[in-house]
Length: 151
Ligand SMILES: [Zn+2]
Image (cartoon, rainbow, N blue to C red; front, side):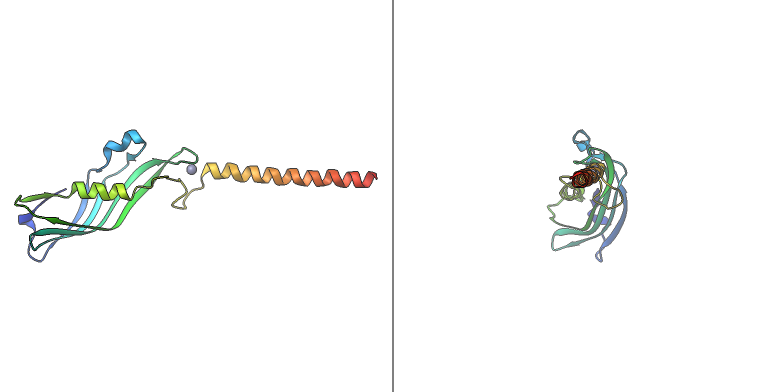
């Protein structure tokens, strides 16, 4: 995301739009972009530096560490902020900063139920096992009851 300094008026500039996903090279690590980067930023130039702040979001497909299923997660950066010293060039590329911030907000151990809109299959299996154990315990008791009746 390149910004031309000449396009930034003294009172600042509001930029909102979409860009290509900045982390497309992570596909080999099981992280796949499933949409474009959305940005909503305020930019300005002050004291020989460029500042920008706003929010970013990037939908990605991740693999759950528990059930190994793929799921879509939206990486959100609600308070993106950069401050860059200007050294002459007329354009400033914000992509490296945006990419870094998206990476920082990427879950290190993604769980498919983290957003609360689905139940992880790995946890479902665990729950079934617990119920099975409870049933077994019940039948143990009934065996004991039968023993008591005999005696
Ligand atoms: Zn899962």
